[in-house]
Image (cartoon, rainbow, N blue to C red):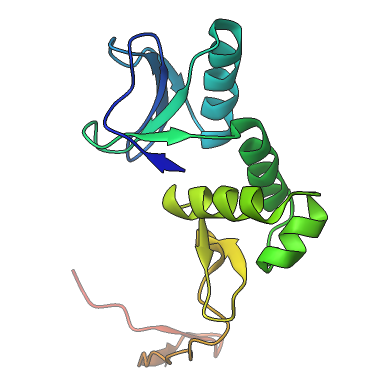
Length: 162
């Protein structure tokens, strides 16, 4: 992932909003709404390959990141989506997708930058939504609840009168 100033006229831009992704051609406002990043990347990649332009990413509309190897990125994204719990070291990812070291490192760094993957302290990449790092100790939460027996002897949370 390469940080540049901004896209040129005609480049394709993927915008991230809190609930969806949109795709647009620079300098026009976002026009195609997509539910997932994979869908947005497919749409943007189709436009970009037809017109031989670059694909860019922005989450705030001010900082733009040019995406390289977006076809491979889409494939890697799909692999992590299809296999929940998948964790890979950089060398495992390199072997799995038959990539050279530089390309693999760039793609994984791009997916971390897009906040899709995270690099754990154990050196493994995993989906950001997969939960905590395996080396991070779990913290226990304490919840107290008084249970009151009903007519049949079952215990239910106390109901406070309205």
